[in-house]
Amino acid sequence: MKRMYGVNTPISCPMAENGKVDYDSLKSLCNFLIEKGVDGLYPNGSTGEMSYLTLEERKRILECVLETNNGRKQVFSMVGAQTTKDTIELARHAEAAGADGIGVVTPSYFKLDEEELLSYYQDISASVSEDFSIYLYGIPQLAVNDITPELAERIAQSCPNVAGIKYSYPDMPRLLQFLNVRGGDFSVLAGPDDLFFSLLASGGDGTISGNSNVIPEHFVAIYQAFQAGDYDKARRLQAKTNRLITYISGPNNMSRYKIGLKERGVIKCSAVRKPLRDLTPEEEHNYLEQIKSMDYLDITKF
Image (cartoon, rainbow, N blue to C red):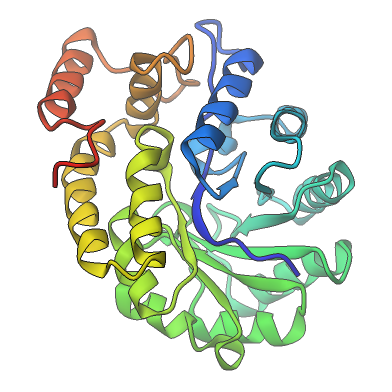
């Protein structure tokens, strides 16, 4: 099975003012991220506003990313949906389209018990090939349902194509517990961007970082420094990155990501899909002034 590693970007979903997906800007964003050195692309995630996309949009977005990528980086698609049926449809499409694997978030809204969540993941696992990689995705602060280390162990033991987990609740002790699943043969990726270096230092594989849409250079530099054994440099880079993401991941962060990408000339429009809202002109000005004052494009100043 393939595993994600290093810096994986949950690609923002560029949209025009009329609310339609801007596929030209999506291609531009993919090329930008690849050129900046990220290790993987992860379309249709939370950062891609997947909850407000139709199934057909999610399929076309993945196809666009795969075509643009053209085998240069790994591509895992987030396929989790509200129903098992829809998730299976997206999972099978991802495998047929040529993705390297999928991420599967827990269903949301209704509080599911452990048996329901186990059955959900077993059904998804059985719907694709035995060697097609699946990552669990836990984000209980948004999805209501959580994935405990105990549940992850049960899923891993019954679903051999489940390679690991992206866990997005800021709980370092729990991330460490996931490292013990399946006797330590379980890939763990940090959802909280500020824990990237800490997880790497503890034996984790990498991050799926929303902020890496806007500042991929910083996350790539952290990973490269860590891989080179320069842990002090990696730590200092992480410290600066954490100061930056305080503003980049502030309230209305889907809009903030797109404003940053528009400012960098990567996408044409910073619109988000309603009911998400765009920043006001004053909010946008203050946000950009703040990150510019921090030399957000300079990775040499810690």
